[in-house]
Image (cartoon, rainbow, N blue to C red):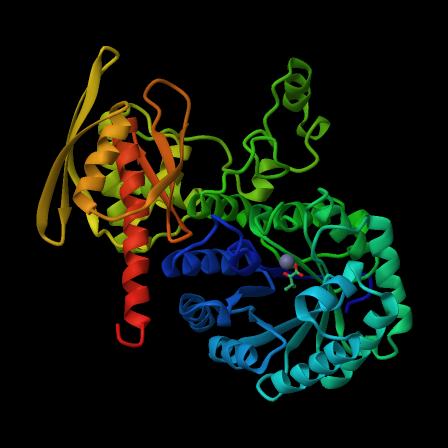
Length: 516
Ligand code: KIV
Ligand code: ZN
C-alpha cells in the first residue's frame, strides 16, 4: 500500500443468495444473470450467486454467472456437508476466481434444536468440511451462523480450527439481527485478541436488520477493522432484510474521513442497481429510504430549496449524480431520432446492444405517439422492462372492456400463444378483474393472485402506469411487471408476465424430472 493510501475493504454482495431466498424475491435464470451483470458494472468484489444445493435452478444460475462474469469472485453457499460442497464446487468451478462459502450454526439454541449436535461435533464437522472444500479450491469462506448469540469461547475455538484447516475468510453473521454496534465491536475485538491464528484469514461480517441496525452494526465492524462486508442491493433479504449495499457504500464514501477505508464500488451504478433489483423482485423501495428512495434527494421545504439553489452543500452531503441519478433532464418526444434516444440512454447509464436498442427504440416510438413528452423515468421503465428476461409464452393481442359504475364489467381478451390465438370473455368486479378472469379461462392453470400494485412512472395525466402483480402456485411466488399509458393494458401485461414466468419455471422443472 502506498504511504497515506486508504486501506480497501471488500464488498461481498449476497443479493442473489440471501436476498433472492427471501419470500417473494425469487428471480428466474435470465433475471439472475441480469442482476449479476449489473453487480459486475457496480464492481463489487464478491458475488454470492446462490446456494447451489438448493435447487437445479440455483445451480444452473450460479454456473451461468460463473462463466459470464469477470473481474470478481463468484461464491456459492454450502452447508458444512460434503454433498453441498460438491455441488457448490460444480457451480463455481468455471469462475475466474471461485469461492466456496460453507457455514454451520454455532449458537447453543441452533446446535441443540436445529442441528441436534454437541459443540464438539459441530467443531469437528466445520473443520472437516473446510478441509474438504480446500481440496477443490483455495478460497474457502467459513461462517459461524448465529455468531452473535454464540458462546464466545466456542467461537474462538471454531475459528482457530477452521483457519488451521485453510479457511481464507471467517465470517461473523448476526443472523437474527440481535446485536448492537457496541457489542459487535467488542465481539470483533475479542475474536482478534483470542484467535491465535486470526492474522491468517480475513474477517467478514454479515448483518440482518431485524432491529433496524444492520447497517449500523456493519459500520461499527468497519471501524473495528474487518476486511469484508456482506450486503444486498436495497437491503433485500430474509425477514427485515440484510444490510443495504448502497447505504454502506455511500457511508464509506461520504465519511471516508471517519471510516478511513475505501471500496472498489462504482457508486454511479447504485441507482440503476437499485431500480433493477426492485423491478425484478417486485420489492418496492420506500420513498424515504436512504440513498435510493424517491425522496432521498428531493427538497420540498422552501428553506431547503433556497439553500440548495444557493449552494448544494447546504443540505446535500452527497450529490445525486454520485449514485448515478442523471444530471439535468432532457425530454424526448415523437420527433426525437434514434441518436437522441441512444444518447439519452447512454447518459442514463444504459449501453444496449444493437438488437436491444432497436427493440427499445420501437417501444419508445409507440410510447412517444401516445405521450407528448417521454421523461427519463419513462425511458428507464421501458429499458428495464426488457421482456427478453421472460419468455413470451402468452402475448396480448388485444382486449375490449365494457365497464361503468352502473353495469357489470365485461372483458374480451385475445392472446397469442405459440402461433395460435386464443380468446375468452368474462365478467368481473371491475374491468381489471374481468380481464384477469378472461385470461384465467384461456390459460387454464390453477394459481392465485396474491397482490396487485399500481404506480405512476412520472407525474401528469398522461403518465405511464406501472403495475406489479404477484401470483402464487405451489407456494412459489411469481412477480409480473407491466407498463402502459393505459392502466388496464399495464395490468394485463403484468399478469401475463407473471404467468409466463410461472409456466417457464414449470416447464424447466419438468425438464429436470428424472422421467420428465
Ligand atoms: O444470516 C446468516 O447467518 C447467513 C449465513 C449463511 C452467512 O446468511
Ligand atoms: Zn443471512
